Length: 313
Image (tube, rainbow, N blue to C red; front, side, top):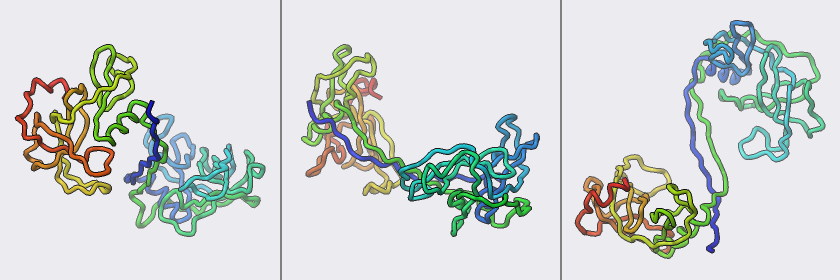
């Protein structure tokens, strides 16, 4: 059995969202060292504020300031902070009900150890030195033995309000393709394309999945397919990807390799993008040292008849 492959993988992208009037006021308030909540029709004050009452679904927009001090309602210890978290040293994640609020706000609590935090503990906001209108304008909470803080009486109206935020999402994990696709990738590095045949329906799946998606039975019999194939359908890419040194426009296609019962993806080159068509016969182009084909190019054969690939669209 071939070695099962694994590799680190990072999925990362910036997520941009616009803010409604309530969230805009809340984040702008943090920039100005003011904590705002929203009052419901039954008199509850929700912090952080929401635009609709979670009980009645009624729209709410009555902003009210609360104090920068509060009480820990529950907590959990974070012994190993990760990249991008509020503090670089171990801290507590805490739900804090600020004075004047009826709900709790989740944030970091800076204490030396888990023995230094407890439910009912009094805390206050520690503001970031540089504030931009984001939840990170609250650097964290810290223990507080003094009197309760007092709201400044702010109305919730600001000049130069924050109207949008950009959140940088990132997921780091170790990916393993499993037994079947590990064998597939290993054979690709040898310029061979290998699928697996279902012992029941006899279909050959490329890339292999380790089981037949139709019959639900395990697959193990390896079958070499291609290297030539047929374009079953395609799209024209007009937006350049940051990590691909390919000029746009270019064509990305589904390609049914000869002998396979499942089409795989591949880029089409060696032909103007506006001449790519369904039924085009193609073959792989390999570059030295590559673990997979760089692209597929026309073979010069006549186009395949539609009936030969219509089930693979």
